[in-house]
Length: 225
Image (cartoon, rainbow, N blue to C red; front, top):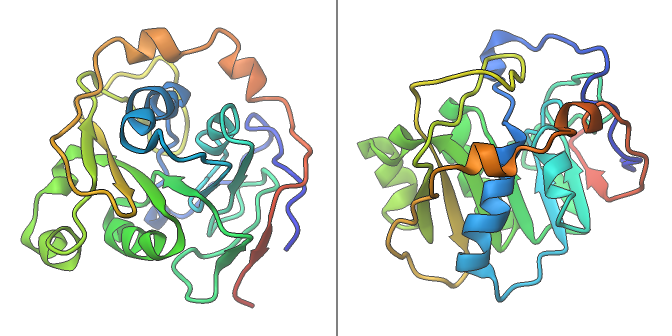
């Protein structure tokens, strides 16, 4: 499947099933990863390619493209934005060529499966999840015991997300963190993302820019038939 680019984030949207747990990521939260976290844990690596395999309407992948040369998105549901439709958890879903970074805000209940597959697909993996995801015997046995993240990076401030839409003015009591794995790097102490990210990393033109279509060839995605 040849990717020709992404269509407007502000284009006519399609409602996904409730089961998809769709919570668009505020752009500033992804910029915080790129500025505050990745340089500290994998700054020695030159990340040229990134893949968001649960990209929804493109809120994260379009921000990744600000710093990463080839940023590509796909999703199991067609949100009407022009991204390839592919189930990341299908064994036959692959990105060709591969990605240096897999970065996504996965469905909470499928996040362990996303992590396990992503770790086999890319040398750097970053998942944005509620901080409570660090807890639980099941997740420990399935993932953390043998494949602990290189860094657990919680936001000091809240990252407000609204189901089914991006609301720049939203507020939230839910805490979020980036879970980051870097191949070959041991686990290190938690890295707190300092306060003020929303203020510093929100751009005045975010709403307008996300309404502009991009048209650039990126990758081929080999998906299950």
